[in-house]
Image (cartoon, rainbow, N blue to C red):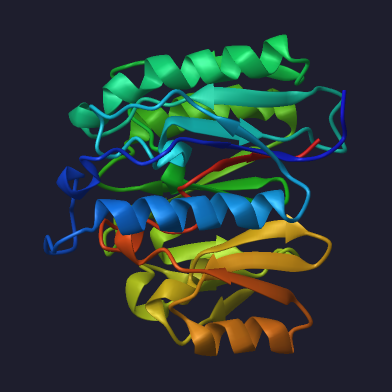
Length: 269
């Protein structure tokens, strides 16, 4: 099996502007610009040597482009002899539950292609969105808020324990998902814009950033991170820590409470 990492993505729906909103007011979204920005996002990974796997388009699902909410992939712990786990979630918003079937089809295609995945699912009445799951080392911080409940967290904790992971539940009330407020740098430092973080003391170490759209980063590997182009001061902060910073414009997705993490599911091989 090839050792290159891959991302699982879904092209944006023409109905993207109808997506769910919780904390932001609805503003116009340009579908053509969104498609162009999504292509640029995917190209940033491809240019770093990542394989790209597209899920089936889902024009009937405005939020389908935010694939991270439907699938959580937990990598193998070095202290645990098992392989990675793919968990199909149980989205908290009823409008998003129809995305699961095509997501499962995509996971099945990966398995058929030789990607080593154990597959499990969060079952109702539990609810869990992947955007609420932040992996830092052997810890999965899971946000309990509008989209993820105690039962969803309990089920996830039981599923990931054999994979060498423990779950720490944290409150989320100021943003839609945990990873709308905090993500992590490659060295494990949790970063976030403090006005959007319910309890920064939960995370150690924690690095406050100066801009709202600087909270979300994706580890591209080899000391590089991907982030929004709408946070230049935060990009400079990350660069000062020795990181190579790759920026992409994602304004149309940010208008819908999206960020660079939720547009893909990353699988490192």
